[in-house]
Length: 145
Image 1 (cartoon, one colour):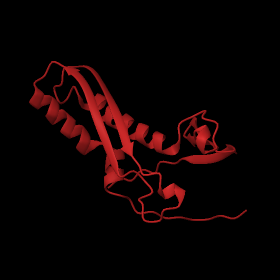
Image 2 (cartoon, one colour):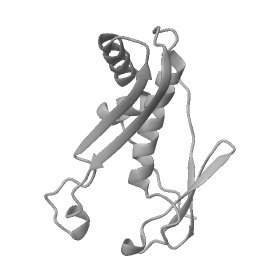
Image 3 (cartoon, rainbow, N blue to C red):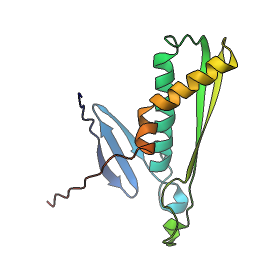
Image 4 (cartoon, rainbow, N blue to C red):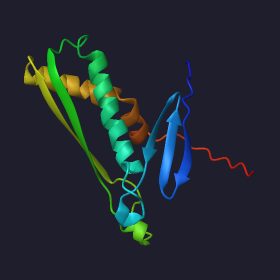
C-alpha cells in the first residue's frame, strides 16, 4: 500500500478569523457576527460541507466518461443538520453534524438506472465521505513554545 501524507496549516488572523493553508493555496475561515465573527468567510462546518460536495463533484468529473455518462451538467447541494444546544452547554447533545443530505442535480443523456448507478459509484468512491463515515484514528500532539 502506497501512503501519501497531505498537510494543512491553520493560523489565527485575529478574532475568530483563521488562515487555512495547504501546498501553495490558502483561504479564510470565520464565523457569523452573531457568534463573534466578522462574517467574512464560511465557518469550519460550512467548509467541511463544501469539501464533501467538492469531493463528490471531483469523483464525478474524473469518472463520468469511463462510466459512459453523457454528462451535460452536474451540481451538488449539501446540507448538514446540527444541534447548536451542545455549544450552549448541554452535555448530552452531539457536537457535530447528526445528519448530512446530498442532493445531486444532473443533466445527462442516460437512463435513470445509469445515472443512479453513477451516483452510487460517486458515493462509494468519495474520499471525503469515506473519511467521515469510516472515521480515521486520531493523534494529538502539543508543542509548547
